[in-house]
Length: 422
Image (cartoon, rainbow, N blue to C red; front, side, top):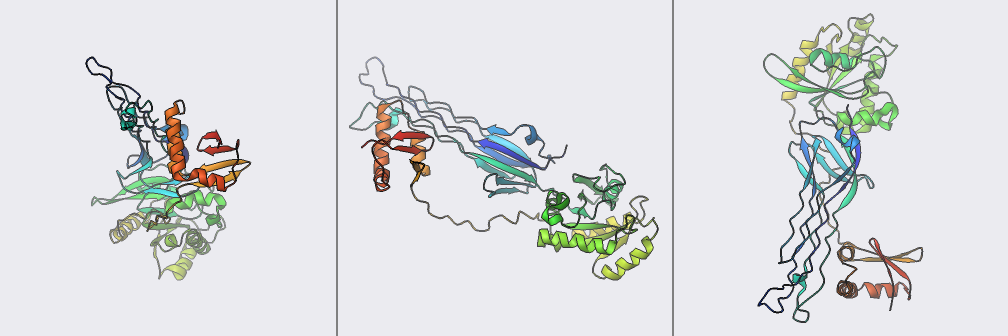
């Protein structure tokens, strides 16, 4: 089945824990600390793959986690790093943060990769904490937790040509005539509810990819008739073929239909509204088509290439296809990326930590202090004392006093809560 949207949870691998060990060998008195470091956790990586056309794999599995690093061991042996988790996505997938909507990546090239969740670094073993004043430390760091987030995946089909037009204009019949695509075809609106791709080849060996976009109606740019579900698939195309019901078989006016559809395209994205177009005046085998064709030529014949066709009988399709190929050869090959892709990244300095108060609890935030807390083994007094020294050196204790903290108040840092003691 065709799925073009998915929401998933991903997590980088946690780092391995450092080891607390002492060297105890014959003839080596007071061998000292000998605990190795933990290994780094694996990253979660997205890779674009031309062999995929849908996000169906993420429909049934929504949680992904990379391998954690192995723990350090005695004899100063470091743990192995966790394996990266590589997830393949169709070319044309846009990756966003599911909570903030921030654009993370736009995968438009085969093999393009992006790291979306980094693994945590491994904790240091007690051999790393030996000092002249403490030659036998009995503490080690825990592994750093891997990054985690919820992501929204959105596929925008990549095709050379997109078929647009009102429902039941004959788009699906057209693509079934000129390619091996076999979309559902019936005589009622919105027969096509998902985009279809077809490859068109001509005798001289040239070819292109055509996308059959489900029908658009007035108000599509606001989401009417699932407009947003369909319109985004037009963004990746280089050329639009506007299919019109020239016979007005359902009481429609093809001249008005052309105006309305183009208006919806421009309102959704002005760049799409300016994309090159060819008019396919379809259903020329039905009554009233000749009269409406004359009106279309009068209204748009000077601005657009107009081809009278009958998708049902195949009349006029060869001329249309060869004209499309000639136009594509004169258009740039570069694929348009998302309009939201930042052109310049400005790195703004963030505060080292923040102190806020909420419901009587003092919340201390900041990546650095949260990392120190997460990597501290709270079961070892020596490790807790080290954390207290770090908090004091960072100025967090002074900031808490300025915020009005008192004996017995609760302080929360990351996932841990502490009772404040003078």
